[in-house]
Amino acid sequence: MSINKILLLSVFILSISFLSGCKKIQANSVPKSCPGEDAQFSIEFFKTNNKGEKYTRGINHVIIFNPKSAALDFKVNVGLSHKLYAQNPKGKIRREYVPKQFQEIISDQNSTLNGLRPIAAINADYIGTDDQPQGLNISRGVEYSGVFKNRRSSFGISGGKPQERKATIQAGRRAVNILNYNLVGGNGRFYRQGKFKDICQDLGEFACKQATNRSMAAITNKGYVILLVNDSKANSNIDFSPINQELIPDKFDDVLEGIARNNCLGKIQEGILFDGGMSPGLFYNQKIYVENFGPIGSVFLIYKKPK
Image (cartoon, rainbow, N blue to C red; front, side, top):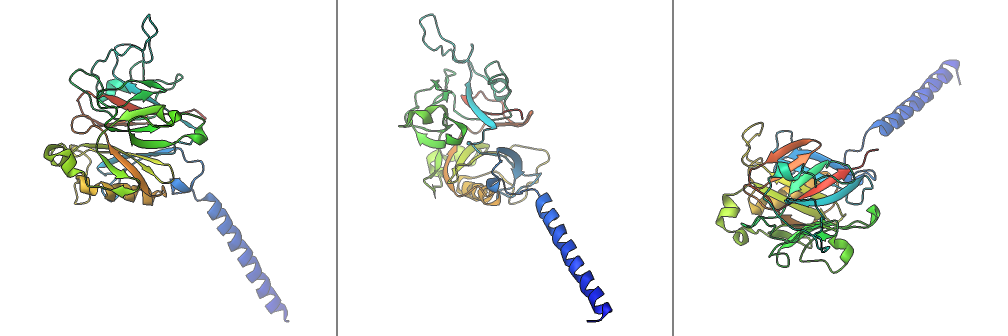
C-alpha cells in the first residue's frame, strides 16, 4: 500500500472516531423531552391547545405530576375559621366552615405543610349554601365532607411511602384505608377504567354549554396525574383559534389523550370534573394562572421538597 493511501486511511479512521465521539457527547447532552420516560420526573406546568399540544398561548393550563416522586408531598385544604385538624375540648374535630375564594384558601394558615408553601394547587369540591363542602374531602386522614360524600366521585392521592402512593378516582371512601389519605370531592366522571363518556346530558344544558370554565383531573395507566383548567373567559394572551377554544364535554378526551401521548404518560384511565363556572383556579410556582371569584369547597395542594 502506498504512503498516500495509508495517510488517507488514517485520516478516514480518525474522522470516524471524532464523529462517533461527537455523537456520544450530543446524546448525553440532550435533555429528556418526555417526562413519562424520565425516572426523575416529579412535576411540570405548561399550556396547551385542545389537541393537548404545548402552546404558550394555549387556553388550557396544565400540571402533570408523578405521585410516587419522593420530591413531592400533598395536602387538602378547606375553608375554615380555625386551624385545620383543630379539636374541641372534648377531642372532636372542629368543622366551622367559612366561604373562601381560591387565593385565600391556597395562602391561609392551613395551606402550609411542614413549613412549606405549596408549589401547585387546583380548586376541587363544590360548596353548599351553608359554606360547607358537598363531597368527600379528607386532608391527611382527617375528613371534612358534605352531604354527597358517598354519591359523588372524588380524586385523591394515597398515604404511605412515596413509591407506594397511588392516585384514585372513585365514588365514596376506598375499601383500602391508606387510599383515603388525601381526597377532594368533585362531580362528573367522564373516564371509567379507560372508557370515555360524553357527560353533557348528565351535566345539563347550563353546565355543559354555558358555564364552560372547566377544572378537571385525570389518571393514566402508568399512574401519572394530569390537572387541567380550561379558562374560556380569559381575555388576554389567548389565541382563540378553532383548536384553542372552550372545552365542551365531548372534547375532553381529545385534550387529555393528547397531553398523555405527547408527554409519554400512558393511556387515560380515570377522569373527573371539579367545580366549574365561577370556581376554577390553578396555581403553580408562586403564580395564579387562573382564578374566578366564587367561594370553593376545597383545594388540592402539592408541595415540592427543597433539594
